[in-house]
Length: 134
Image (cartoon, rainbow, N blue to C red; front, side, top):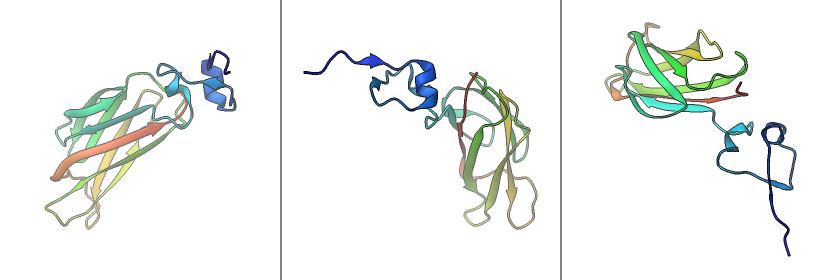
């Protein structure tokens, strides 16, 4: 007979070493492998779907600033960004800049010219962020 399961505390989730505690939905985000923020947005900066993402601001062509709902504990977190291309053929390279605990920028540059540009096929940009939150 199994005993009553113990719910993992935040520190147990962050160290991710226990095999005897359970994870409840309200605690899952504390595990290092869980995405702490993600979003899909269009070139205009309109959020299409998101988790822990407050807003996306379009700064210029190929340049957006993302604001996170719950800040990370430092600037040392990982962000992966990707998205569409131009006219079905021109590839864009996506990268992140200006990273703070609560914001970062996503830039998209044309592979052929190195100039910032918006995707149009599809008109979508995506990101996912992993790290320790405050």
